[in-house]
Each structure stands twice: as C-alpha cells, then as structure tokens.
Image (cartoon, rainbow, N blue to C red):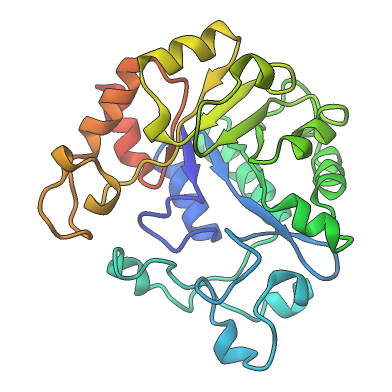
Length: 281
C-alpha cells in the first residue's frame, strides 16, 4: 500500500508529517514526487510551480514561484500549505507548520520508521516532469541514481519502486537501477506488452481499471498499482458519494474493496488507514 504524497488526506502533502503519518497508518511505501532545486537537490513537490503548496508568494513576492529558481537553503525558509483547502479544510490548519523536505530526508525517515515499526518502510519516488528539468540542465535521473546508490537502495531487494509518466525517464533508469520501475498511465489503452519490456508495474488512473485490464496486465507480466484513492465525494464515483457536498466523506472503503476484488497488486492512497482496513476485511 502506497501513501500517496504521504497521508495527504490528513496532512499537507509532501511533508515529513504526512509521510510519517502514512507509515504509522500502515503504508508500506512513501510516495514523493521529485523535482530539483537550482543547486541540484531533489526535493518533494507535486509540481515545479509552488504557489499553491507553499507560502512563497508571501516570502518571495518578486520571485518566479518555481522550484528550480530557488536553492535548497531558500526553499527551507518556506512552509507548506494545503493544496486543496476547499476540499480539505481540516488540513489547512497545519498551514505554515512544515518545511519542504529533500528526498534524502524522506529516505532517512523511512529508515527510522522501519526500525521503530519493525517492518520495512520503502520509498516510491516519481520523476516529475523529467523532460522539463532535463531542458534546464537539471536532469532528475542521474541525481536520483546517485542518491539511491549512496543509501544502498539501488538493488533488487531494496524497498524501492521508481515511477514516471515519461517512458524515456524509466528507460534511462533501467540500465542504472535494479529496482522495479513503474509506468504511470493517465488515459487511453496502454501497450501493456510494450511497457513490460522496460517496466515491472503499470500505474493506471483508477478509471482505466477493470477486470480485463488487470487480467491483461498480469498476462503481460506486470503488476497493477492504480491511483489515486481518496475519501472525499469529489473523488469517488457517484454511487459511493455521501451527498452533493464535494468535500463530504463518501464510502471510500467500498471503492477499495471493489478494486481489491479485481486483483490489483497495490493502491496509491491519500488515506492509508482506510486502505489498510479495507484490505484486512
């Protein structure tokens, strides 16, 4: 079970607090989206643009609000904010409390929690907009390989998956890492046998997944990790919503159970506790 950006249904996403809560709720993997600073450090943000997830506008009103325009030291002066406060007002009460973590901090956290919880806590990073960063001379892949190797996390037994929407990014990593690679898919009908030529897992948007998709992916030798499972009505199918209020809490458990019955091999969840409860039956 993958804690999507941490337990981002309960804390602002991509913060150490969200990641730690995800593990304590039962997540097996912590999922950071990786972007790169001006001085080359991998940090955890959903997008290069950080207006909606930090207080950058208040602290640096005259700067272009993109990660690659700041050094790590500068980013550490910012504080995280809830990305969708209209749907998660409870999370907004934490605005201003948490820093932007570097990827190394997430690795260190996973190692500490592995010891504390007595079970492996892995990392499941995504190369985010790799072509964009490559064009800036800040390619994500070499630094990701360096960091994973420096932490002894580049082997087949490492608790690591690496994901991307860009197949080229995964192909570059395939020759450098011996960890499972995950091709993310947002739309259409993916070439599953083709993906199996360079990846171990397919990560489809959950709307693409039915029994035939899981069957065909498994036949191609791929595991299936759909995304993203959230408890708010806005993200649930109509029949599982509790009301017309987009921020209301619907029947997320029924959705998890539906997908587990299809035979998926893992899920990306903003609410790891609910996913664990559903899996346990």
